[in-house]
Length: 501
Image (cartoon, rainbow, N blue to C red; front, side, top):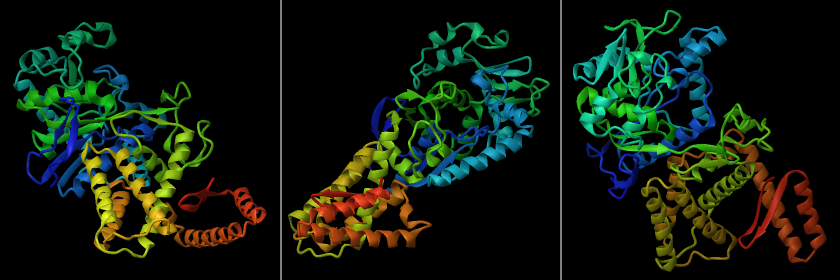
């Protein structure tokens, strides 16, 4: 295990040395999708970020129980505590399907998109509808402990009482209970049932037209949105576990209310460490369908969007996401995607070069120490709160050396074979096992890519001979003809590389 790993804790607002509750084991809960529509790109970024975190924890040797829920009930329009329409119910009416048909349809779509992005499945993926008894039991525990009250068949969490007794409400989000209480009572429906405007429903009595409903001691109804995560994280990870994650937009009210519910049920807070991924922007602005500033994953792949000039492969997009730290905003632009596509290809080409490069070094020397420091630096960057952009930058430093070895500008003198093999292993491990990238050129069309790559290297060698003879017109003709069919040659200090426009 690696005691050097530090994680930024959204609760304490500090980076902390990661020490799991149970040595060698990690319990991690991440809020999953609400399956009433196709998953949007911002969600994909969150799940890719936690996929990398999951992968790296496993790489460090931890046995990780990764729980990611599916919200298939209780998520009301506008996140209103009561009186709103369940998002699944609304979609079911629009598509003239049963709510569970909607949930199944979009869960399948979500899983398909996760496979496209090469996101590993979690250890467990519980559904809210599959855990109604556990949620009813938690409501009763909160009532028994005096942190909730029943009104006309609905049950509300007494936020003011919790804040006064615990002193921790608002610690995660930074919201003050006084500010919440002073908010206008007209902002929420059925306020007359609440003791305080900041209270939130943990069980909601169903209106006659509500499609999803269950029997409970208080009414025929359904659980509040926040309750499912408290109930399911407790069931599968225990009352207190290591990591709770999700998007930054979930800090309030969702995660703040989770903390309150868990405390109300068992007298303890759920997670030691809270992690939040930041939002995805489009051309510097928040994504919004109403403003026309949005793009779906499928549009990104096909290029069928006014915001981009062409389609981008899933791995180029995943590489693009890796280039920004998970806690920073990520601005999606056509120019940034083009740069990411080139960077991804360069990295994959360097990997292939390194794996095929014959060892021609000698005894341990200065270069051996330098390569070891490179290898160590990649690990150090990931140990610093999973800093993928800096880890990538370190890998690209190695790419330059690999290309220099290949081109003969730098010999392998002073490099041991043991270190050389360790470098090859590190490159493979980080690209594929930790970063979760796939060599798209080597999947599906492996033979055709190898054929094209072989021909291109032959053409590059022929052009090099032409240039050596100073036959500049012929050299330019080769370059311009290739460009006309979408292939670009790049001449640099480390030789000539090829790629698609």
